[in-house]
Amino acid sequence: MAPRTANLLGSYILPGVETNPLPGLKQATEAERLGLGTVWLSELQGPMKDAGAVLGFVGALTSKIAMGTSISHFGTRHPMVLASWGLTMQAMTGGRFRFGFGRGTPQRWKGFGLPIPTLASLEDHAGLLRRLWAHEKIIDHDGPAGRFPSLVFEDFPDVAPPPLLLAAIGPKTVALAGKAFDGVLLHPFITPQGVATSRAIAHAAAEQAGRDPAQVKIIAQVVMSPDMTQAQIDKAVFSRFGAYMAFPGIGDLISTANGWDPAEVASFRQAAAEAVEANKAAGSPLKGRDVLIAPARRLPAAWLSQSAGMGSGADCAATLHSYFDAGADEVVCHGVTPDGLESTVRAFVAAG
Image 1: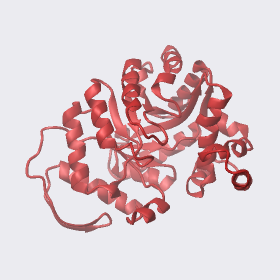
Image 2: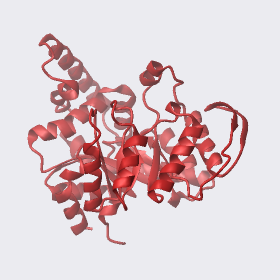
Image 3: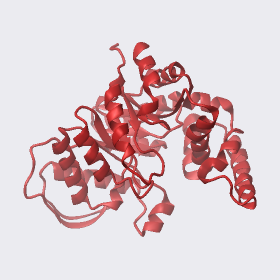
Image 4: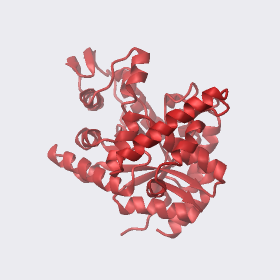
């Protein structure tokens, strides 16, 4: 087996809500210095994280590292805009762009006044992009993605289209990634065993669709807190864990994927609801998801030890290797920006 190198790892830039995108550029150049393979940007988490603008700057400031959306959404841009964006990024970066998409939450789409994505619409959108990138003229398309009388590129650049990735938790979405996408971006807090199960699902779906399963990349996302203080771990790990597990549409899927006890999740949600009410009664001294840190500590400690990287850089590197042992092709470090990853990357490569 070939040694595992730093380019198998990725990291987020501008994690969480941001009002200033400029630090993301320094984070991206630091990731390239560390030898990471990809930096990722999640859209719709704040007003200053438009992926087209930010990743365009990242592409100009770097020369080797890939950059991807984790995630963007089909419904917020017209298919012609998405197809053009993907090809333009490929041309400008020498083929370093990766297009990750996801479903989002029903509440978000209702608020936006847009149709709630379905598995069928995700597949249809992906098909539209692939057809446009294959120089096809799409006439009178009427499908789950919408009705489009005429989608045509008059001119076409000589560049390969970017890979299409799909964010997923549950087995149906994982299977769709295997059937119609180039890879799956697994949700944070999926355990190595959950990764192995998801890999089997995606590859089986790819094979059933007549595709080469080896061409469907399994990308795990692991929340990391290397060499952090307890207060920093609370922010990076416990607040995220609590936020995901408190939301039924996400927490239940994570729990099922990992084989966790739903009774423990129900008990946590009761404690979380009580904590939110107590925080309101106290004048809301805790902001954002910080209110969920204490309730998250009531969840089984083994769940976090199985699904997150905590401790020293060497401890976090060992966690990363456990995900590769389970079948991940790449791992994205979540919860920490590249400037906090040097000890982990060095230990990962040394143990590779």
